[in-house]
View (cartoon, rainbow, N blue to C red):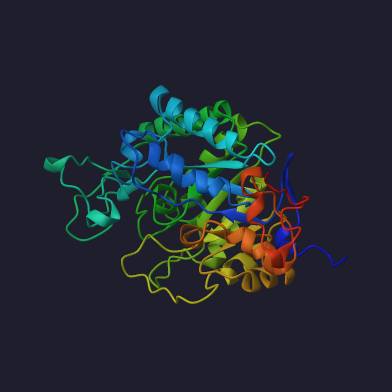
Length: 377
């Protein structure tokens, strides 16, 4: 028997074992109401929960109402939002008792990118007289020219927000999430602290790399302290700003990743961009894999590669060459929610499907679901 492809080999994160190395990356749906998940999320995440991936990361979830990117963002910041999420998770866990989905919550705050319209409603900042709110950020620097500047957070604001992150982390454990991820990428609040383009502070949280890392690392330490020791906690970062005017690049990201590892992070999710309107991104298949590879060589914890990885034949060599340990996919899952099944069939591996779907196993991939085919009377 041929060896199981790396993409379908298990990976252990603390006491959590992933069945394979495919990760459903978080994808904002901008469809919540007052932070509460809706039927849309049940259908959307239900499809992804049946996908056969090693872990499903729920979209960026705000720690407070003002931390939402849009009014439609999901939150877990009070009893109502927690109850809505609890009902959703109960539904997802009933879908496939043979292999309940491994669920991760990405914990986030939008910072200066808050109070925006959804992408299909322009994505621009919502004016205050149209239901918008004043964003908060490391410095009073707007994301785009002409926007209402955010309010620079003072030390009391930072202390209060830390408690918000702690509260959401505790709620995530109470909800039974298997893992959490701290969102420090894509130009949102924690990335805003890391980048000198958005962080112009002259206190202990601004200026040098040491100072710019201080608040995100402080939050990570606080989250790790209240998150159970047997459960993994990851960090998503933007490995570069794609802007020559910024020093936030791969070298600084490597140092940040090392510090995250030292504080108990269990993986690094290596993305990029999002903080600068002048970013020049060199798009192409696997364009962010070199970031994952560099970080992978600098830390001892697993690293996720993400970004225009669309085919099994593309993903397997990334793992085999040691560039990354996990492959995170987002939009490919929207286009093809059964992509993991197809990849397993192509590579000669197995997945665990719900019993209701066993009869769909193709003649060309018998044994795909690792069971004896069933018939019907």
